[in-house]
Image 1 (cartoon, rainbow, N blue to C red):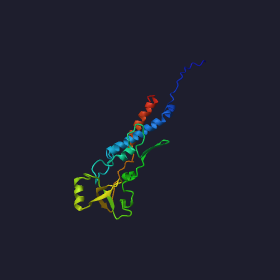
Image 2: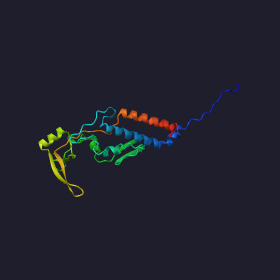
Image 3: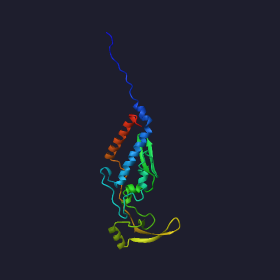
Image 4: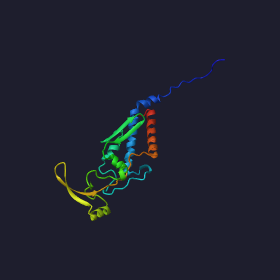
Length: 210
């Protein structure tokens, strides 16, 4: 009996090789997606993807955690190549991508004083903490009126690095409680959005569209 089997040869696409070739591109794309996610978190003042939002400001008007935008730009510069902003870093280690910032006040802005003894910040050597208030309309009318009426606000002269004297409003406190405003958390909704975006990019790579 003769062998009448019909055989058809098929060359399977080298998907593994294609992914390996574009590994760095996919890493940078993934980093950029994380940066974009964090940017949306800052823009929404913590409410992005179902979060309850950050506590409002007491002594300053404007957007929470974005007075100058330095912290935001270090973490989420909207860079299509996933590169970090000034003060920030992006690290790749195996299947882990780490986005972070080296700004010294980042931990305080993220955790507030929740990890400190009694949950407050206290002076180390001085009798009280001197807290400078932003110039102009530095708080809502009710808070501003209460502080001025109670005599809590003082105007002092401070010498600038250039040697000039500058007037500024300050308040003194024996302790300060700062709420946490988490920008390091990553929830299930963030993960789902991230995986969907990354999968679309992987499909583009496998289809040879990059």
